[in-house]
Length: 58
Image (cartoon, rainbow, N blue to C red; front, side, top):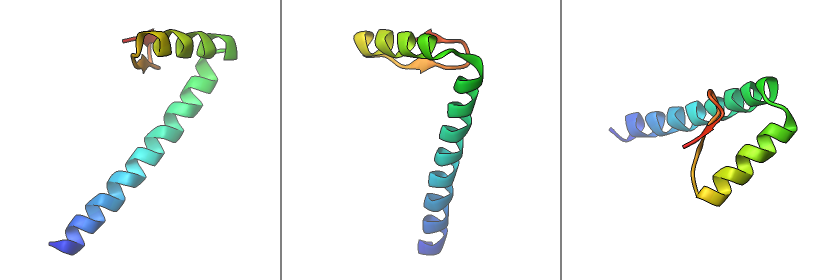
């Protein structure tokens, strides 16, 4: 069980890292720096998250 739990944990971390990388490049390809900064300001003000696929602060 310990081995399986360790492998699942490592895979989960790797998936999270890959999702982060994919999201970074998707955003970089689809939004200008000004748009990204505006969405981050709005999300910070609203204490919300950004749906990068749609550009909507939710």
